[in-house]
Amino acid sequence: MKMLLAMICMLAAGVGPLRAQQSGDFGAGVILGNPTGATAKLWLTDSQALDAGLGFSTGLALYGDYLWHSWKVLPQPSEGKLPVYLGLGAQFRTVSPNEFGLRTVAGIAYWLPRNPVEIFFEVAPVFRLSPRDSVGLDAGVGLRYYFTKS
Image (cartoon, rainbow, N blue to C red; front, side, top):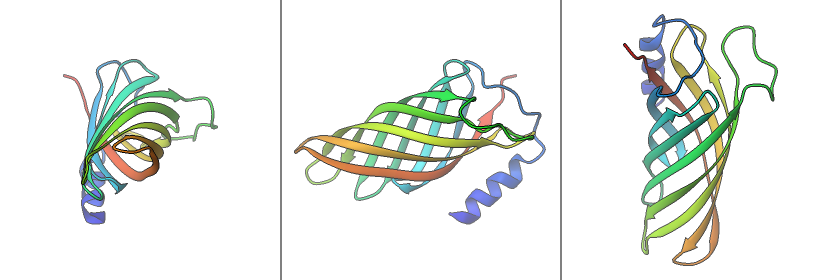
């Protein structure tokens, strides 16, 4: 998996200049952690986005979140961008019995300069509502490549 992340970074090198996120920007990539799998993000505005993931932990996990980003919480680096984000969402896991829960997400991302690549780390407590009340913790580090519009 580390090799896959390194190859994606190398392929993305030199693709284009860094720009602000815009409505309709779409990125896809991988997340390693709990769960490990595929991730995608669709920007709705320059500070709000939807993200989703499909991965494996103790079973198949599917989640979706609404995220709010701030570009002013942390000092910005001389190159790239460094937002923090918070979000709310839901998760479904296929374990025996199946589980449904609500997620709260907190994360930090780094946008590579001159490349449409986002590296991120997030933590997401999951408040499981069925089949019984419990609390779990999702966390992961990931990478998304953003496809440019023509």
